[in-house]
Length: 103
Image (cartoon, rainbow, N blue to C red; front, side):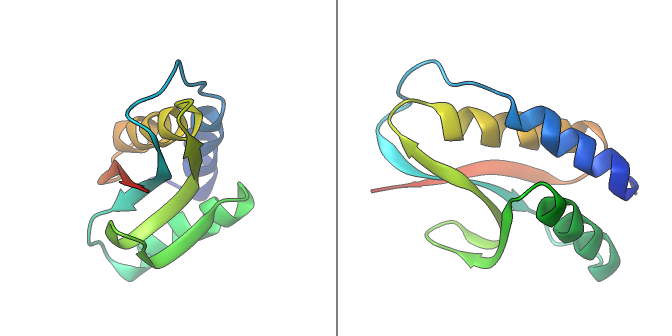
């Protein structure tokens, strides 16, 4: 498993992503995590907290174990951040995916 600093860096690098137009409308953007050992999930929660991202046990419309990245106002910014963060986390061995819930 990746250490806290590596996870924080992966998240921070993903937060710099910028959208390039609507991806289908407005809605909430999340990064969802697969089931994992409690110790690994707690490290991820701490990293999210350090990056100013809220962890949600049951996210609106997407299931459990999610990081709320933001609300996408049909500009693609929050969705791009979710995609980038998920890609970065997967690259360091964390099982996750980007997901969203439209309005």
